[in-house]
Amino acid sequence: MADDPHFTLSDRAFHLIRRDIVSGRLEPGSRLRITKMSKSYDIGASPLREALSKLSSEFLVIFEAQRGFSVAPIDAQELRDISRVRCDLESDALARAIRFGDDAWEAGIVAAFYNLSKAEARRSQNAEASIDEWEDRNREFHEALVAACDSEWLKRLRNLLYFQHERYRRISLTNPDPKRNLQAEHQAIMDATLARNTELAVRLSKEHVDLTTRAVLAVIEMPVAEAT
Image: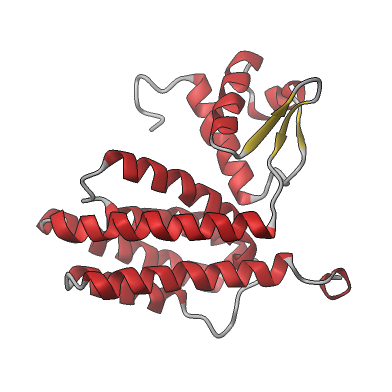
């Protein structure tokens, strides 16, 4: 993306700020002060405002008159809503990808799964150091699954919801369920997809998202006494 000759400072700011919001480096509800951000990102005020306005349209940033920009808060009910809509979009996109996908699409899924497996192995050795890499490979795997979907609008909407859900999912990665095997879940979704078993692939995909949602809810709805 950065090698694209049309990639502007505003684009760079957008990707950097979105990364830091989704990863939790910029905490939910925190104020986004242009002067401070200009120093930390080494980007001018105008590109930053453009990026924040775009992030506001994606609901990761909130703008209030007289108060400026802030990171959107997190909320259990919002997570349930995001997860439900994401499941609907993901299911439709996956079903259409299975219908229209060719050999190159299948090869892309296998390659993305291999890269995710390597990232998973590194994460098992050093979870904190490898979490960003794992998230990138995980995103690429899920994008590969739906790459052959013939609806660009469906993929755009799915992408918007994916980043919203990733923001919450990061919480579950810092509080992992020891009984859960994410790699086995990914393997099962891939196998069903490559077998062109649409019903099974969609069901496994929904279960995968639902398990993550429940894991996050267990953390954000945890009583304060337990959390401390």
